[in-house]
Image (cartoon, rainbow, N blue to C red; front, side, top):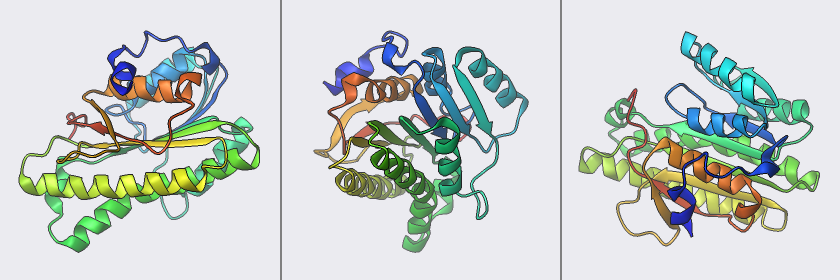
Length: 250
């Protein structure tokens, strides 16, 4: 079933139920999340987007998304001690009147992989990458549960294909932490109509929670649209493998 989800092109499924959907995307950049954001915009969703990138290319992308989306709000500030994921998610929920779908995009670069050596440094990297996504997820899921709104959350962590055994080990630890986080959050809201899934670096060993291997950004976009649609209502607690998606700008 998972293979059939990503085998289609992102534009092949119309998903008319996504028109007017309240969609929040964090971590968008011109090298990550473009296909995903366009997929929701082309289906006339209402979008609130967070990005840390301020560039002419991002201005052009925002204009393109605004021309298709039912509504668009852009927050071009990185998460920080003052602009926290919690504050952003609360503001997005207020502006939209709720959240139907949240996608948190997290990119790990080759430079970041090269910079970690000790176990403490690896753990710090994992916390830095997953902490904001978890924080935003908890706010969105809590809002969905309180308002009895059916919703889906996808945390997508992408990284370049490992170049060394050390890279593979670091990414393996990151994926294990992501899987544990996803299982914990999915269990916490299992009694509500909130579905929580993830995309993570491909495991180096077989993993029973792994789905199909996503090899491009359009694959991730297709998966996100599927999970946000009626067809994805039965899926929660899954971690889908991505291999070498974060190639550019790394």
